[in-house]
Image (cartoon, rainbow, N blue to C red; front, side):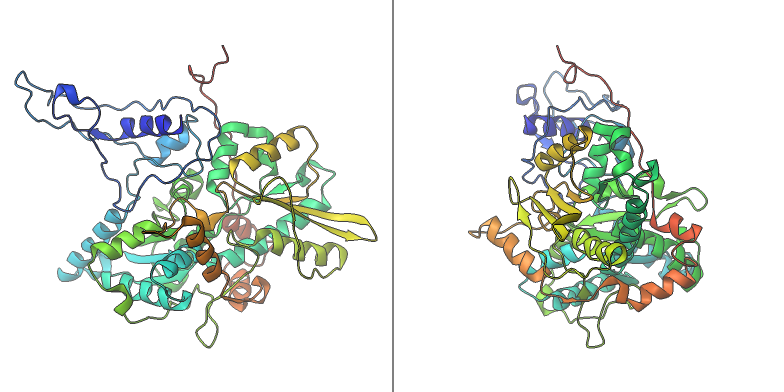
Length: 495
């Protein structure tokens, strides 16, 4: 069933090249897809999809003649906004034909910059910024058998050789996201008896989960979802607002911002209207590449990646120690929201310090919980729910009013972000589980530093946002969600 649904997606979005009447629909060619984009194991199936109802106009002037000669139909395209406007499908890693969301588009921008420079029109060149997620970094590190520092240094060298101007690490924007999420949780906890204090607070950094909630559960579940932006979108605010206007002195539309993420759903997130500036006609994130797409760029460049020298990250938005070691937050490969918010809330609300956290695993390894107790009384109860099977159980508990948790770290992908649909997979005889275990080990090998100790983040809260309670902080660091009206079709009607 799942493969049939994806096939419908492809049929709607692809050019169909027919080499004869009898061959039917067997010969598909993907149009516009990046070479690194591929269908991965999407086995976390929820429910039969609604039909994909996006109308596509195709020029059929090249129909097959009497002699059965070869012909090509016009390429049909759907955009991410088309996908988000339709409640026809939900998967743990939605895979659609994406316009302006492939590494080919990045190369076009870099080539245009090169031509402008050759013509002496440097002022018209766009500043190209690439922000790399720690999950993607770890995935590539395992493939190339390197440390976090070595692989990111070579990624920086490679990208700058193509013409990229700045390379950042989204660990920096994740510090913002963690701090803001913790503040939001404390706000909600103190107001839990009012409408403004909806608990449990559900993590919002996974766009697959958010999209599912908007399409499937709408206004009932949305108030529980954290309003804090994901690290990707906070980095978008940093790049397009602070870097562009304050550091570079240019309009945001003169900056082309690319992120490298572990998940295809991040492309959907970047395309949301909430993250588009009408004033400057630009998005906070112009293009999202997956880990696999960045690796495809390296492969297509036909270079020996391991032989590249390492280059330092640009220091405006990166978490690096004085001895050039990468820094980060612990708490798992999905950002560490549960552990950071738990420790912050325990200290802020109950003046308690939380030591080592030992989880209680429930029905499976992707559903675990932790209870903070004092004298036998449960003060805080947190959980992590990964994968749609666990998410569905969680949502049903909330709807019945029987959810015992104050906060839940929700991720669409089983095993979390390190196992995202855009991550690299094992090659050859190596088992995927073993490959994922190696990615987890590399990811967790970085030196830990709590977000609240990040002096650069503190500085930006003051000079960029005017303090954590100011209106601009809410605009740059928080967002809203929208119920998407469900469309009835033959697959959703209960006969």
